[in-house]
Length: 272
Image (cartoon, rainbow, N blue to C red; front, side):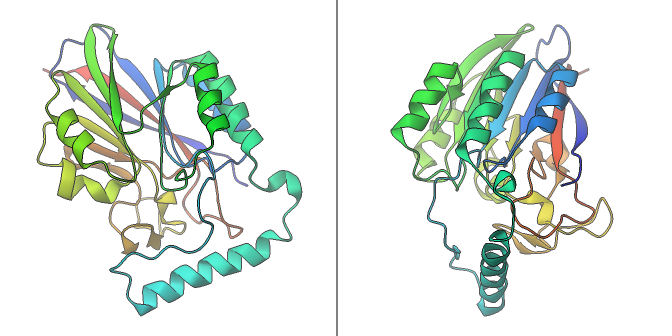
């Protein structure tokens, strides 16, 4: 597995920020080893760490189809899923996902900076032991809820939007005052549900960068939730209001092409 990179973005905000605020954005660990991501976090010394879903593997492990999936898309999804499932049988045990790796990562991450965690579509069936672990480690779980923090003079509302039944939460979160940071695993939900609000910054994952990209700025080949060559696979969009991570792990046996695993760092600065 190739080494991860750090991708940095700078966002200016019209709020009283006394000095730059560094936010580390982690997404899509999928219970893989993440020692190299932890090392990058230690080197980066962020003020906070946000984790935007699919940290754990707690879901029905069968290919999921959206209503809009046409036969060709359904064939692609099924082919990727079952081919990966077959090839995984030949992967050494220490390279396969394991809950221990997710917990080890979070246990160490919270020593670096406060951790705010939301869920993704792979966390539909969290266990009681998972919730107890998060509480014990002092990790702030944001599952269709939000919290208010004051950091370097900025009053920030941090909300976590679930993959399911998020409508009531989102309506309430939009009405909050102050700088609003939303953790939303699914970037395809930004335009229909978030764009017309005054939410300042949304951080997303889910796409894995599209797995294959032609050139570092190219569109991903297959983007979950967006289909073939989806436009929100990776990067900064809508004038800096949406940032999509390519993810911190590789979840299929085939390699990522022109699409390295990444840790995203967002620096908030005071606007003019």
